[in-house]
Length: 100
Image (cartoon, rainbow, N blue to C red; front, side, top):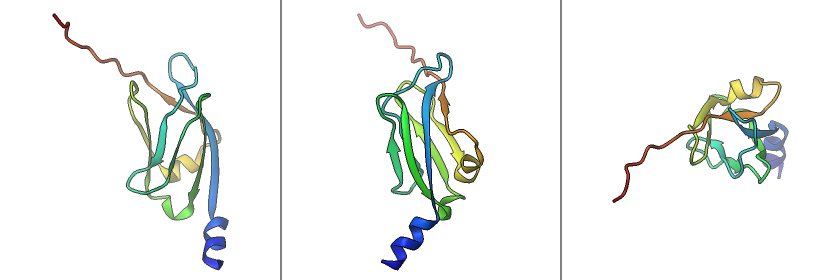
């Protein structure tokens, strides 16, 4: 029980929104997590997310990804320094060959 309380004390709660870089509209159901760890979340239908990250992950990398957009990565320590936790993703356009 004491170990659980200790880890909860040092965890920081982040709330933000994932937005389209060009249109500034929210992107729904975006994957947000620390690479190689079982820590992450998914944005809701309004692009909003909430993520709790402990201090022990400050040297790890946070990755934000969604089909149709370029992935975005940032070191957790740098993410924690931000004043606003809105994330902007750039659309990724795929050119497909014509089907005959």
